[in-house]
Image (cartoon, rainbow, N blue to C red; front, side, top):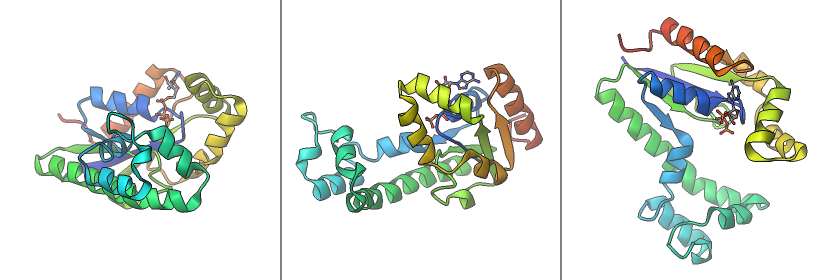
Length: 201
Ligand SMILES: Nc1ncnc2c1ncn2[C@@H]1O[C@H](COP(=O)(O)OP(=O)(O)OP(=O)(O)O)[C@@H](O)[C@H]1O
């Protein structure tokens, strides 16, 4: 039986930091953001559907989708956003499930699904254990402003667009507190993975 771990948290709470640590420990990680980029590359079904729905005006000269242009179209238009999500979301889910199935078939002891919006997208039934990466509000705000060069208002708007981290924590099987150093985070991660018997012997 493969153990499937869902890794999630809030924006800039430290998911990528933790997923990199999990990879270093040899665990296979399937990344939802990476899948979302992959399914809209030229040649993919979702790419063709997006061009058909939004027109060739959203393409760059090299044929790739111009994410900024598409983003500008869907940002303030609920209908357009729904149209895009109806194309992209099923493709992302299909890709992630196919990758997971391949790992299960190959006998992987553990598979990690890194899904920032695991709760918001209602995908918790996909995983056996939910691991939430938590930080205090003020640290989240500071790290997000520093990493993305956002003003405080821009950073707050993005934090508000997600479920509150406290709600995610309540529903987690385990929580990593990422307020401290990376080393402290790594220690907590190792303890949880040992408790879940997630690592290869
Ligand atoms: N323990 C830590 N100490 C100091 N800085 C940290 C720590 N953990 C993460 N960071 C920094 O905080 C920022 C956010 O971390 P990270 O990118 O891992 O978050 P994330 O949850 O993956 O974010 P997003 O969902 O926005 O992609 C990064 O700049 C990262 O380098």
